[in-house]
Length: 409
Image (tube, rainbow, N blue to C red; front, side, top):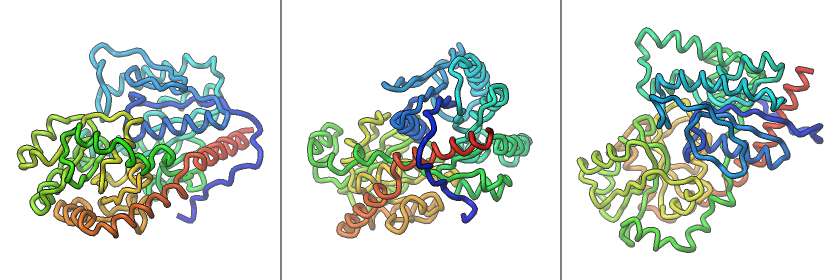
């Protein structure tokens, strides 16, 4: 990790930049990479820069953000998340849409995800502006996690080759973790001097334990959670690579030992699939599925938790939900991997990677040792406030812009 240096912000910014932020997804939805895109755009605007987000046809508009959308495709109007062959058509439309935005005269193209690099690179060459890549995980690893690509099939090596090419096109790469930076350098031979880790951050004034002070009992009752139950909260996508199946299996073991525990599972898609799985595991009355929770409501719902859990098993993606848990001062249980350690440090409660019984034991430890759990929660809150501020991240992003523009000049 010695090769990755966070740039020092310049003392004076020469100008306010016009940033074209390319988001090959149905922005905005209340999860993962969308939150990173949202908060990066907000902090850049707060610093005086102009940001235009170009994205797919679907998605929620966000007040205060300039969003340009593609046209829809008739056969896939409701696409939201995940790998899909239909994304090829979406990305072609996104490339065309970028071309219609020549009038914006961007200083920087800030592309999210590998598809963003693919879409943006021709316009970067044509307009003569630097391309910044916001890397949030390995493209092929994510496709394998989503069961869209077989690692032993004929398409894996061409996809891996394409990923390597895309990784080397931008002038600079931002990663959400040091683990991802090492992956780029070690597995794809990207020059470490072009890589800057800028972790996911959190708005600690919004995600705060102060939410526990009002309306908590009423919200708990409205969700049908008995008042005397300890609550384990999960907020994020519901999918196998997110560990949702493992979480429910661990919940079965926890409830068998502690019937006074309730699991509040917040997120989408596949809610009905996981509700049926919970019923099959005998968790009726001990798990509540809320479906999609709007981002602005997330702190209020997380305030119901006594313990938070992040069972994600993907080895290359970031885990921004951890920061929301941390800022809420929630003792947090996660699988023991490099990304979890990077965020939680010594105050996380870890289970062996992919181990259901280990996850159940870690949850029981957090639920039963209340003083230790409270200490860990407070320490995680302090860590989030001190190390993971969007104001800090915004300064680092602008420093990268300044550097690549100076190099181009």
